[in-house]
Length: 531
Image (cartoon, rainbow, N blue to C red; front, side):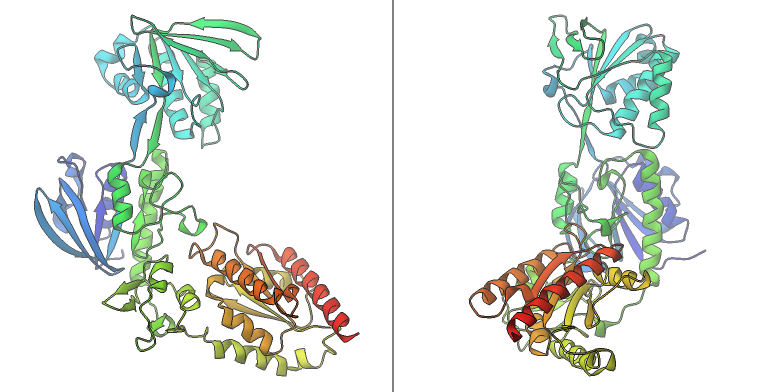
């Protein structure tokens, strides 16, 4: 049993938050569980010896970094302060019924999906649906999702099997790719649920004076017109972040996805990570999820907390700001996606938060940020030492074998280069690969240094857009290359000698093709200049 020594703050009051709390408490961790709700009924079964439970709480402020977050909360009008090692966001997402999307008003004959689920769980309302005709509307006004569809199918199955009701599901795209949904779909069909799918047409929906819904539609499969007047119409729901969840994302400076959930659309954030070390997001706080996925998230959070406590990092490997050279322009502060730059009052690097991506050093206009291994002299030394090695110096004339330098993101292109070599793909004989923690760490000075120290051509190989661990580093790299190419266009220096593209770590064959094609281009340029 691993015992955790630091306190973790859990924000939430649903099943996922309670599961996370139980996981951490079972490992003898100390937690502070806070919820904006006044009721913490779900927390009754927690081992409270190592837990502080605070209801009716809202976060007000957060400072510091992983291992030492200072937070302020409003607790029933009283301001409280706490220090925690980790912050875990496990708020429940909002569910908004789509009545207006279908031009319907809620009532006894028009229910939301949550309402029908609640009715089926209560004996009195459950019995009132006996033998009724129930119609579900989903995915007709906006794209549906597997979570909503699963709830609809489970409700339809209960209605068909237990209450002898007749159910209909009107939809466009049927999202059955989730775990077990295809089997559930077949089961509902066997029980008698009728599915009507629309591709080129849409149903006409009208609410009658008695509150019931009249649906007129053309069945595209059997090519016939139909009219349905169900006893109960059920509308689907949109799952979205609550306003409080959005506020938390802003307060904690977390990147958000396209729907506003506080976890960026970035493969490196899977499963529960955010752009800030020591802050995790789980369950429906990070997107639309089924209950089994929330349970998985709860376990992943516990693993992440354990891993953070056992990791050690060397301060000397992190970015350092030379205050004497710093002009306080705040370029580093604005460019750091990990929020590892603090104003105290001048910019300083929070060592515990720094991910050593090097973006801040590359964008600093005053060259005031140092990062071990990425100094301009470090890069120049690598190049000159490589040129002095027999593997590079004894091959032959540069016109036949030009000297190429490839700056490669160590999470993608560098691994692709290693894969190309392992797989036996051909590579240029005088290609020097320089791994960098992020393509965003490559500065204009690095590129000019490569050329001034003998490179005939320079490659910049980044991760694909959306796959950058530091979120925007690959974009910065492409911008720098474009800027330098613009400078080259005003001189006699060929801009083809500098090339940037994207690669994933599993693209060994593509790495070989790109490098060989680039060598051919540079060889032709050298031959042309020597003729």
